[in-house]
Amino acid sequence: MELISIVEALLFATQEPLGVSQMCAAVKDTAKDIVESASEDVVIPEWVAPLAATTEEQVRAILDELIARYEAEKHSFTLVERANGWRIAARGQYAEWCRALYPGKKVQRLSQPALETLAIVAYRQPITKAGIEAVRGVSVDAMVQQLIDRGLMKIEGRADLPGRPLLYGTTEAFLDHFGVRSLDDMPNASELRRVKLPTAEDGPTAADQPQEHQLSLAPVAAAVEPAAEAS
Figure 1 (cartoon, rainbow, N blue to C red):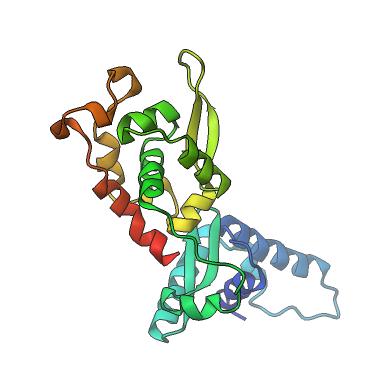
Figure 2: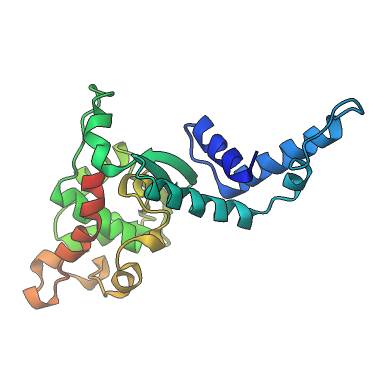
């Protein structure tokens, strides 16, 4: 039995994402238990003991090997890494057939205003509602609540500003929805974080400012929209 088969079995046996450290611990602990519990009458296969020294680097290499194997053999599934670990998932081109298993669940598309609001929060979190409104130029009360209800946004705390306004950020469900492992994996993350945005303290909202001073939200929303369509 090879390590690659054990890692594949661990991923297959759970519906939840598994972290590299979890898989590594499962392999090492099981190997140690087998060795320690063995009696003189039981012959332990020679490949078991070395597994007690399995490293996370070995597990990561195994994951890369599995992905390459699934690709070469043209399987309908692959391994994907999410914020909280790895999992086996069907490839995107089979999404429509997989959805047939869940007729009660409809694909919920995000509207353009929702994408714009979510993009601002994703790239500039933690951010206040006033900060979002300064960029969008419209009230976002309903949109923020909708995104919180859908589990894509959450309250991060309160800002050290007069009135102690709430701060908003994205959730792990947001990362999973858009298929990214972390916020740093979002398109143009470093560039868009450096763009100067209007703030509530600037006075007029973005809607009141001259067109040349407004941030175009189209590229920001477009950066996350393709992933949303594929989810």
